[in-house]
Length: 146
Image 1 (cartoon, rainbow, N blue to C red):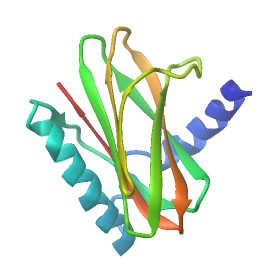
Image 2: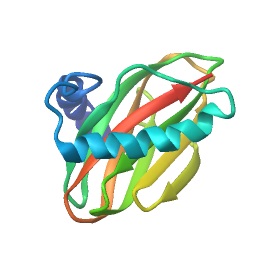
Image 3: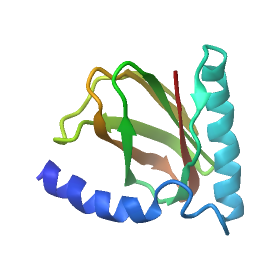
Image 4: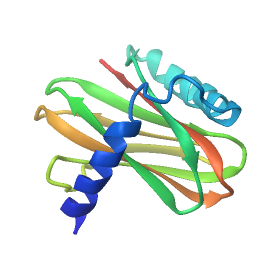
């Protein structure tokens, strides 16, 4: 079931992922990106570099997006998500190419959430961004590496 969900979401997510919505983003999505970049900035103090591209959109409560990313062994990553004030709780989860959950370091604080991970095997991974509580909100995902 998880593999089928990931496959379908990957197809949809690929169409929506990094940069494809960069032109014509709503004010809510731009505001969410500012929140995500503020959170990601905290990781730059530890030597992390912001990766080009982002995903931005609007999520309703209990709605999620799956974003595919290619990660490389030997690198450390922090995945950051930010939302506008209408969001009350965001979550972020990481899955490997088989759909199995990957343990991460977690941070969450209302309109912000992050997950940290050290890659031991290069490949495609999937990030699930979910709005758990609150009203429909602009949401943005970015990630950093070192």
